[in-house]
Amino acid sequence: MSYKTAVIGDMDTATGMSLAGATHTHVHVKRDETLAKLNEFLTSDEIGLILVTHRVAEELGFEFRQMMRTKRLLPLVLRIPDKTGYVPKVDELQETIKRTVGAEIVVKKEGG
Amino acid sequence: MATALAVSPTRMELMKLKKQLNLAQRGHDLLKEKMDALVMEFFEIFRKIQESRTKALEQLSTAYRALTNCFALMGTLETVQAARETRRELQIEISSRYLMGISIPAVEFGEIQRNALTRGYGLHMTSSVLDEAAREFERALGLLVELAETEAVAFAIARELEKTKRRVNALEYILIPRLKGALKFIMMRLDEMERENFTRLKRIKAIIEEHR
Image 1 (cartoon, chains in turn purple, green):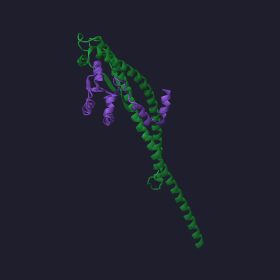
Image 2 (tube, rainbow over the protein chains, first blue to last red; image 1 turned 60 degrees about the vertical axis):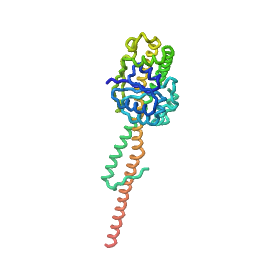
Image 3 (tube, rainbow over the protein chains, first blue to last red; image 1 turned 30 degrees about the vertical axis):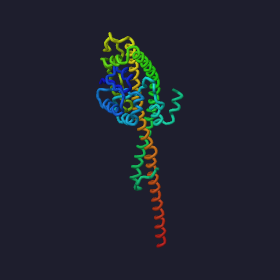
Image 4 (cartoon, chains in turn orange, blue; image 1 turned 60 degrees about the horizontal axis):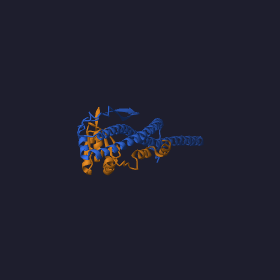
């Protein structure tokens, strides 16, 4: 199956990504609107990848995490930094590892 | 913790329990092996993610810089307009494959990079900085798609790992101790019955002797 990409983020991100070929873009203004749009993207069958800027993801907060937990395998959702290069300090993946693997994460950090 | 199951102390029950315990132990060993394999897989993926993440983020910041340049030289409105006119859309192929019983996405994509003519915006109104920005973003998007795939795999593995761990723990700390407790209870009880019987026989024998 072939899929399209969608972007949710600020103006710059949306513009840049649509220059690169993303089909669906949404510029985040209001929280409710963005949530509705995200829901639409998630339930759409033609979208395979959703890029969300970290800032927006953080602003959506709980609902966003809830959606991530309940979504199907597709679309994939990736959080990307926006123009300012903003990346949250707490890495979700690190958190997951800490939760699942436990103490072994420290070993990995030093090794990798 | 290991509260014994309510069982009747019979030989039948004992045999049944032994079978159950065997099964539980075998399941436990298998799950533990699965968990170890998953952890190894997970670390492999994790290393891959860190690599491709640094690459993708660098490319992305280059792309943002190019875009800012474009905004400055061409004007914001014009750039946004050009972005809106972009025609060819990126198609990514996603199929799912199986890794140790977990379905994970496998992403493939065709040519992300296009030349200026196929991008779709009019050339006479736009400047070369726009082409530059578009090219950088195409590159960034390609890396991001890859990153998204690996991250999705990592999360799928993590979820499975959590599930497996929970199962292993349930077996190890609840079911197996319980079965063992029940086994012990039955054994003790059977031994006790044997001893009772023995003393009873002795006693009867003594009474019979007396009466003779």
